[in-house]
Amino acid sequence: MNNTYTDLVQQTFDFPQHDFDVKDNYLRFNGVDIKRLIDKYGTPFKLTYLPKIGDQVAKAKKMFNDAIKKHRYDGNYYYCYCTKSSHFSFIVEETLKQNVHIETSFAYDIEIIKQLYKRRKITKDTFVICNGFKTKAYTKNISQLINSGFKNVIPVLDNKNEFEDYKKSIRAKDPVKIGIRIASEEEPTFDFYTSRLGIRIRDVLEFYVDKIKGNNRFQLKMLHFFMNKGIKDDIYYWSELNKVVNLYCQLKKICPELDGLNIGGGFPIKHSLAFDYDYNYMVNEIISNIRNVCKKNKVPVPDIYTEFGSFTVGESGAVIYSVLDEKMQNDREIWYMIDSSFITTLPDTWGIGEKFLLLPINKWDKEYQEVHLGGLTCDSHDFYTSEEHINAVFLPKLEKDKKTEPLYIGFFHTGAYQDQLAGYGGIKHCMIPSPKHVVIERNKDGELEDWLYAKEQTPQSMLKILGYIR
Ligand SMILES: Cc1ncc(COP(=O)(O)O)c(C=O)c1O
Image (cartoon, rainbow, N blue to C red):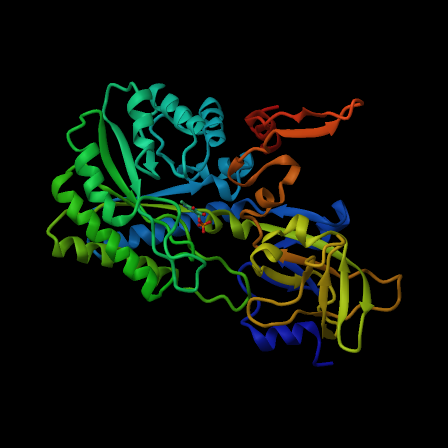
């Protein structure tokens, strides 16, 4: 037989790859025998392979530090972990083993910082980069952190008003470091031109001169930008980076304290065995571009900060399902029904059409066919029908004999954002809590009455699920 699933993979990709190989027709993920886990725990289940996180952090640090050396770049590199990609305590603590710094997105994140400090996982010297549009609760929590002696908390101003809050509530003796997020221009294919987050680039210089310069309680330390489409080798990315570095140079001439450039997150991860992204090339281009612009402007280069989320944690995750049965709904479309739902376990698949790396766990020696994958909810969008590299899904054929093993499949590199979006156990994207719930009903006299069914979700309720408190 030369049309087995193994043949298909070997004809299409370089295989095996360092994180995937097949032994006795069973797939292994980073050397882990997934069938053994299926036998032990049953499907469906989520899997986190923690060692990958440390590998990814070490890989990025090495690439940036090598590029810094190669280009004689006179600045440092700081790896910050973007907590929103996965807030679980065991994930964040794994990143901290690599001496990373932290980026936060919402008021409740600061509760995580406090817990990490209590557990001695971070110190008061750890950089805590506070991003996002700030609510009053968030600016208050940030101010408290600074007032309690955290030396490297950097609130990144998302808008001009935010600064007023810090002026009122921060009482630190030493000057407080702040950053400014520059609203980036998106690609023409995006739904809007300019990001809603950050301050318009043309307003930044004036804002600095009017509001920050001369205030000896605050120092502008960092410029920040982040492109929704990520770090890509295209004209849009290089042009945005160039604009931001030029602004850095202009500001540096009047603001000597400014010494950081935060290029956000956005390193892609492998969503197909055909993935081919030259991380080293991109890092070298970033470093040499920044150095060249600074050299032309005769200003010292900035330290570089990144906030990789998907890159840190994405490739550590997987979700494993069984195929329950096969349904033929017309002459061409064969559905494999999985024992869970894409909507509830991989929400990006239907929300933004994200593709993840899909592979069978067993039956690599069987013939393959094109199939549609269907989830158990009644939602018409609960399906998965195409892959990153091809507009179709191919999987081994099922065996008619019910006594044989079912087909098991895995979606890999699913470790970032999926749990937060799906609300796993009650957590939320960026930890934005469930709002209060007000119910209105008619009383027995026919009048409308309202009552509070639920209060706003507390940080404690999420911290418990995330493993920070009992
Ligand atoms: C400000 C900021 N930094 C970092 C990230 C992480 O991006 P990624 O997961 O693509 O690395 C995001 C994602 O939305 C972000 O908004």
